[in-house]
Length: 317
Image (tube, rainbow, N blue to C red; front, top):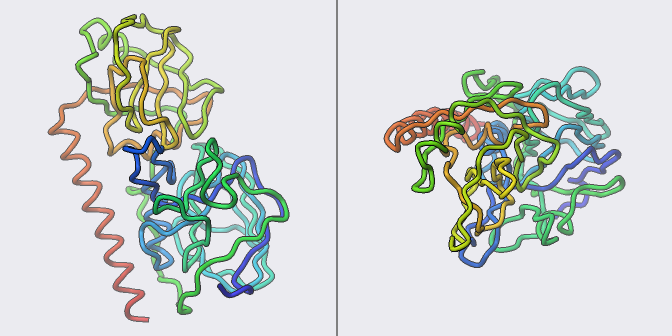
């Protein structure tokens, strides 16, 4: 590790954590974790020539102020944060940062999260194959916690490179609120009456929203089955606790739960789920498995096209 390849956190922001692509250890009861907006994470890394799973910073609602102690190449993708680096800082493209400059990411008028990638990828504690921060367990990333003022972060060395003269098409930007429609797949626990009320209503994201899940404000009739066994809970599952206020599970959700889960958000819409903020309005639109797969395939083809083009750029410089 080159000591000079580092930055100091002057202001930590509301909740800034080291995240990457997350873990594959759910069989051990470990949440997946990882950046809540995986599209932003992949494109931010691609823009600076990193592997898709390289670790960076996930910023939430109010971002950090960072002073760089070495030249760097960075990109910020996700919600439209109003960042500054001696002037307006463009999102969705690679931007050189000179030694001594300060990057400020104060806030965003919509959406909740963005991913800051640094060419080379950030260092961080690796646990179960991932540097992602698990806040509740307290491991991964930087001491298993969010950033604090005075923290110092460093990144892996990488060959210097000019930034590509490219920006990501708005068609690939993750949708943000205040109004979002999420494609959902009904599960065997979705009765016709329950499906009708869940997919025929508009819900509001409450203030109880974090990396584990986002609780909605409006209640629905919640089924009660004391014999229901605890079942796996993937990110995107829509839980119905006894008070009837649905909970949309996110990256840090526990692996199993006993609440009914009549819906699961289609994987293609998990990035949009990660951008929900309190006050946003959400509707559910049921789709078939075939429709969900087709939408995911279209998204994946577009992402791989961008990633491939940027890999070609960095191989040639």
